[in-house]
Image 1 (cartoon, rainbow, N blue to C red):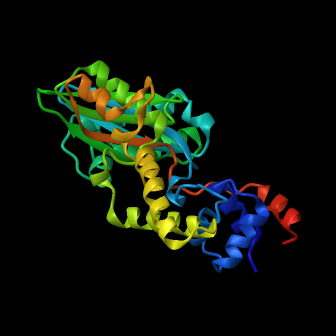
Image 2 (cartoon, one colour):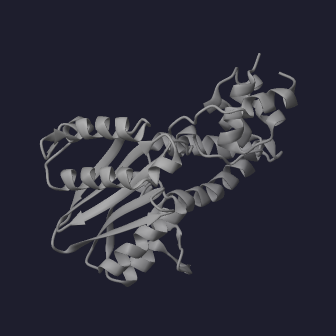
Length: 290
């Protein structure tokens, strides 16, 4: 029997109706990932993978210092604490510690010493003081050459942070690209960066969609290639229509300003993390008779 909490989870991920979610889970023996694909194949949902779910609270932030730049995510249990000055101070402390040291892993960061305390100890102490679990989740440290520029952008007060590196152009263009990436959620810079298995899976789903629309196999194949172009335009930064001028794509905007895009890191707070349970599960149970 499919539980109400599973239906709730699938509904949150896909936005599909509860009964459709229940059917999808029944058809896939309760597998969330397979149910997401089932809904997409039926044309009911265009949801992204489970890893795109937005859940935990906290802040994403950036710091640029000369030829080094850092982007991090630090989590809290509630949005209220994420807006707390003490929490913001913690985020800034971690940013400065990373930008000034050679670190490769989260463990390296947690062992950094700041005024006689490790980052790990500082987090533990802040947790005790604020009364809510705080955690350092992830970071990326980028370096640039003299012909490169950094661009950074924070969206929704630090719910989304983006850091980019461009060559042979200016900081204004780099900031434009960071702002665009914050808004449009590209997963990679260009097609070559997409894993083959990701493209193959998308092609498989799109073919199933076309077949379910009653199209013959040979027509379905042609439709898939057209729809795959749309997938590339949604996933690849360079192929997206530029937010400030949709008559050109991002690649051409950067090219027109003499540059190329070398790197992009985009953190959205809580992506891929589980949401806390609430009373919605009981509401779902009533409506589906579970």
